[in-house]
Amino acid sequence: MIQGKMVIMENKNYQKVLLELVKDFKDKPTLLLHSCCGPCSTYVINFLKDYFKITVYYYNPNIEPKEEYLKRKQEQIKFIEAYNLENLEKIEFLDCDYDNEAFREIAQGLEKEKEGGARCGKCFYLRLKNTALKAKTENYKYFGTTLTVSPHKNSRLINEIGEKIAKEVNIKFIYGDFKKNDGYKKSIEYSKKYHLYRQDYCGCNYGRECQNAR
Image (cartoon, rainbow, N blue to C red; front, side, top):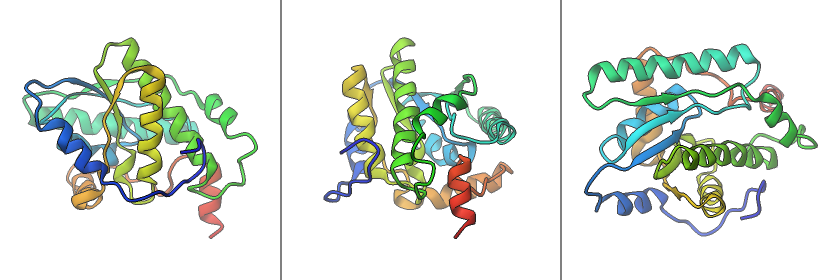
């Protein structure tokens, strides 16, 4: 995998890799789970809750404008609060500052890239690297992301980036392809159940402009 480029290799079932990992767990290890948004987190949390003690980490400096970022963050909190009312084992939430300048910096020179191109690869790396560093600092055993639940995201690239960062930071990464087994469809159903706002673009204004130009 070359950072920032979409490299399609032979098929690999990352969801199967995850199931192989968790099948022998005796206790639930801690997981810092990067969430791109509330709707995507719904199914992923419901899937992972049986295997991990989950803290949702909302680091998404790519989301623009700031008002949209705050709206999506509130929907994430809204889901977690509703979910915790229904379940004995609670999901934690870890907030962070809106760091849009960090995204703007890595996107320089890639503003005209199509959605799914090199800019997206760098964005994935930025968010996952920050998550891994936070997980390491706060002594979580694993880090992961909800990004692969979307059919519009390259799961292979995301998992390869996660693997690379895990080696750099010396922390364990959970592989996954959460769109498998109707994961995306189930996330839509959960979103309806919890009355969550579902955005109509990924996050950054560059991608939004590309989408509007189609």
